[in-house]
Picture 1: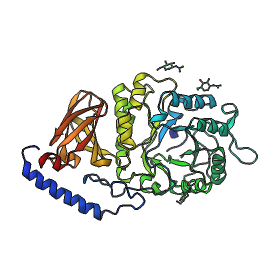
Picture 2: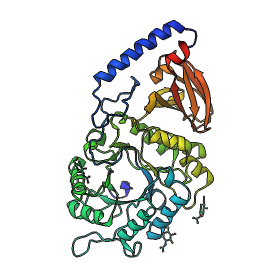
Picture 3: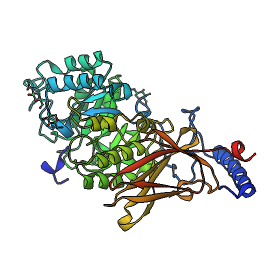
Picture 4: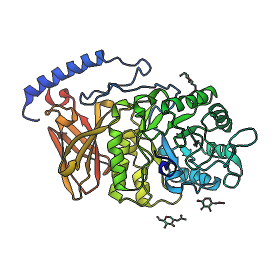
Length: 434
Ligand SMILES: *[C@@H]1O[C@H](CO)[C@@H](O)[C@H](O)[C@H]1NC(C)=O
Ligand SMILES: *[C@@H]1O[C@H](CO)[C@@H](O)[C@H](O)[C@H]1NC(C)=O
Ligand SMILES: *[C@@H]1O[C@H](CO)[C@@H](O)[C@H](O)[C@H]1NC(C)=O
């Protein structure tokens, strides 16, 4: 939300490689025994790439059964801001179905600020704005549920929301009960008008209030990264914003990606870093820039919350947000946030981002943040691979296997502000060398 408005706020090295790989395998086996495997996820693989620090990898800390993978859906704010009503929300739900986006996992239909009337009723309850939501939120939840989707709502850990509707601070139990009675599945909880009280004190009461309802509600913490929530929010919410609001511009998107990267080690199943919602399709960036935005958000295990008008998308927008292979990276069950692993060029504008995936695979993105097309090289050392490891590579935007047996490094020609994204599958020693 717009807090600025309201507050200051190898081939050829055969035998040597065999020995190295053999030792590496032993090392991994030992490492796997030393790293305590959380009993709660007995069948999950632990991350294997040594370069990725997962020492803070939080698993299911909140333990409310949700967010095993990052949330996917839509939110009204980025496109509609306050101009919302029940018709738009219903038509959006319809569009998520008719476009096939719901089948790809975009199931949360999240109403942001401005759904509520200016004041509480005589019983002290929140009331839906009678003009915009005359049928009420329960009816809307029923409609959305009837389509197999989930409904999200918005409130604020302060005395008002950012658009000056009643906030939930000191009303946590009543408001949580009301949301649960409507069948709401998701709460985005904002940070405006917070009386200067620390977020660590204001966000847990709503966690407890939601839990006490007995109804599963995804708890999305939005304190704008003010108090480094990655350090404490894993036990409080299912996701936590790590930055200020995104806007529909290349500078904002790239800045936010870098800020969110810092907290990679703290994300994991049950609790995700949230670099804010998608701007893809809103018109302020080029096709290449939106493709970068979507690729990096997927790789960072960010929530994939569409922020455009899904009732009226261009073919290019739909192509980007419905890329199944990129979505599969985001929803990979290993749940380790990928990160920036290598930079080169002027102002570090040639970048390699990567992260481990299940099945001992890696996702690798070559992101050209320079103003001209360039070749970006991902060296195996930056990816935590032995240089002799043979890797097969699939291009997630071309939907093609591009190489079957690459060693030491891989180079890609990338257009200005574009991002190429790959899955690297290291080959086993035995298949090739014995
Ligand atoms: C509902 O909101 C949409 C989007 O802002 C607007 O185009 C439409 O006119 C509104 N409908 C009503 C009945 O207010
Ligand atoms: C409430 O919290 C407990 C303890 O973490 C958890 O087991 C339970 O599933 C939670 N219930 C809901 C409805 O979130
Ligand atoms: C659909 O989007 C285009 C821009 O992509 C815009 O010009 C047009 O007004 C929109 N139509 C509606 C009905 O919102």
